[in-house]
Length: 231
Ligand code: C5P
Image 1 (cartoon, rainbow, N blue to C red):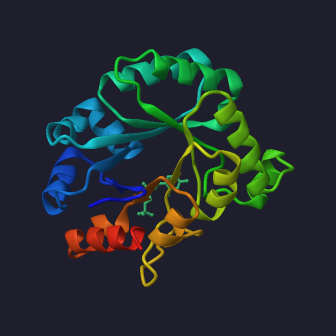
Image 2: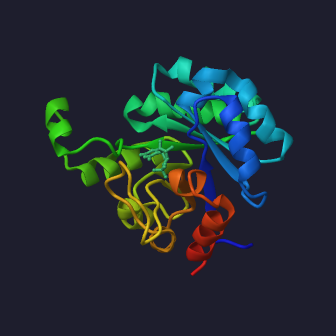
């Protein structure tokens, strides 16, 4: 199956047992999996082994944000576990981002790094609380400039911001969560988009959790997503 963008399935489950049970239900053609904070904190790096054994690509979504040295070392350590893609917070600042990019580049198998500009859970009211006077989209663009200018490979963004970011950063990876089929259940996501819309706006990687992982037929749900991506 050929795609302009990659499909990444988010393994949002509490432990390894639940992950392995899920993997047995999920179709073999899924190449990318995302492991997040919950699963990684529960099980540590050993949780990546079943994925590596199956030759899967791993997106380790730990959203690193700390002093530059700590983030640099965390990137190196994670890369040694064989992950392909990782997240950092752009708000960590230029030196932290540069340190992360440098650390990745020095790895034997360098992971790609993508920066979160603004958590999708934050709205304009939260910005006021935080003393940020920009709009959410201005913040995405400005922090995007900071991250890409610091050597980060790409950005995590809602599909709705992707077009502007693609125009500004023609070569960046754009990772879009919040993907739903037109008839899909939105859950707690606020800014959702269909797979074909996200691809059309310039996304390179689509992150999908519940619509595939919790589907009665995960293979059919994943196939429908891929078909929509290819439209
Ligand atoms: O189940 P659903 O498809 O909504 O899952 C989306 C995944 O993407 C979750 O793992 C969520 O943590 C992640 N994510 C997100 N919004 C962001 C960053 C990551 O929904 N801004």
